[in-house]
Image 1 (spheres, rainbow, N blue to C red):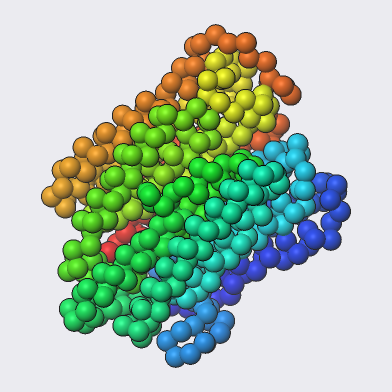
Image 2 (image 1 turned 180 degrees about the horizontal axis):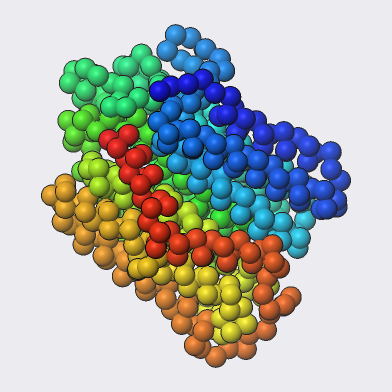
Length: 489
């Protein structure tokens, strides 16, 4: 049942209100700014949880702001897919804010940082809860503008170079999305998301045009999704503070790109249109290349955050690969990886940030023995690494399991080979870090203490524990993801 609700609007507006309030708080007044930022993110997450409860009870929440013209609205409409993405992003944002409070206590320009941190939350909620391509596109553009000041936060020359690359890549991708958006409206007369797609007879009468439009969408959204060879902005953006890196890689930017790709596949084209146009196979080939090549490049990275960056590029490919199988099991695996990858990768980046903050060491070759001095941090890193490889009892196993089942269901056993090869490569670039940290001798002396501050360590520990719980208590995630897959499929 579709019901009109203000809740989607609240999820977008509340972070904006929090950001505006931060403007009036003095730069050095951490005692007011930090709680306000955290409370704003908690309230936003609470609103999204209320949305999730209503949506998974069988409701679709909608709220129209402006009708631009017939068939073109600026509006929100929350279905199970939007609720899933919005829930993952808003809940993990709370942990990221808590972590950032500790991390930024060592930094500068904290007021500006947290203002754009909250604005990025608002924009991400707009993407998740958008009713149509037009609304999603507007927020997609705003996400670039909101996160750009976070990428260049440190203000050094390398930061501005990375920020410029980020802007060029993002706006170029958005330009392709805009072209595809106009073409879609011309063929379908609407940009609204719908079960089964919106193109109708155009699939039969104009297949070549729809293929061109689809390629434009894939390339456009694929920039933020870091699909190779459109990925170069992501490793260079690692100059940003670690909380920003965590958002870029696990929650906001890259997941918004993947969200856009999956929206186009299942809410604009639809399963049958993708099958009729034979699009899935080409996406599978592209994603398979991205998964393997990014993993190989990750092996060669000595800078910890860059290794995690190329790991992200590989892991994001899993999500789109699962969706491109055009089977319900494959789609379930891809959607499940949105959740599992977010929890695991944000844990890994938090650990990396704690190590860098407390020791000043950024290179893997410098981390011999760090596990003996930062045991909680490195234990959490170990949990995240095992989960990324896909080993039981961690949650990452089940994403790949469903994708393998989807490959068999779609008569493509080669998918199992690709995923197993990737798992071996993941082990090759994660496990040596763990071995060096715990079992190699090194002259390791923390610069500012043994472990990170509690505000940084607590999110690390809770998220690592969450990865274990999600791997054991499957009823916390899989039934909801299966509902989303059934809705989209």
